[in-house]
Image (tube, rainbow, N blue to C red; front, side, top):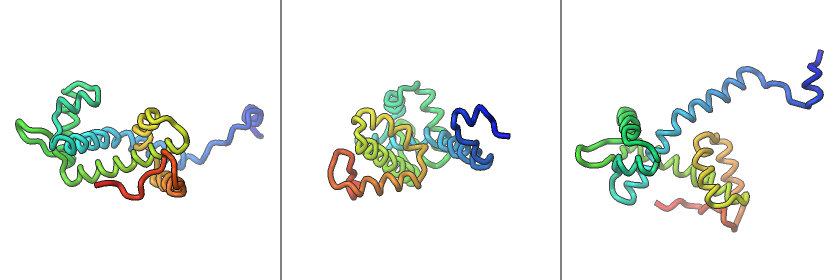
Length: 163
């Protein structure tokens, strides 16, 4: 017998358990990697601007305490994404540089897509910061196809990313 409440509200039936669980697994994995991606992307920005990243600067930009940054830097060091030098800053390893570049490209693509929809610049930048970590590669490819179909406009991304 059909659930009369569901029939009245026209709510869709639950998807199968494995598909449902897979969606939650992907979200949990994205949350686990989100911080690491944010840190290496910020470190790459500091390295581009100043040649190195300092713990105090990272803490200021992320709006967290220095001990929080120190804990994450230890994790990133253990994962082989950064190297630290006494009395110097933090530097990305090759693996860290690759992760930062991938994260940066994802962010730029999501931001460009949001701009193309008419979202304001500040909102697009802010929203892209969260979305970039959770959107699938399939969805990113759809965003890219959509954007490359556009020839003008504020949301259009360049065909080549500058080095």
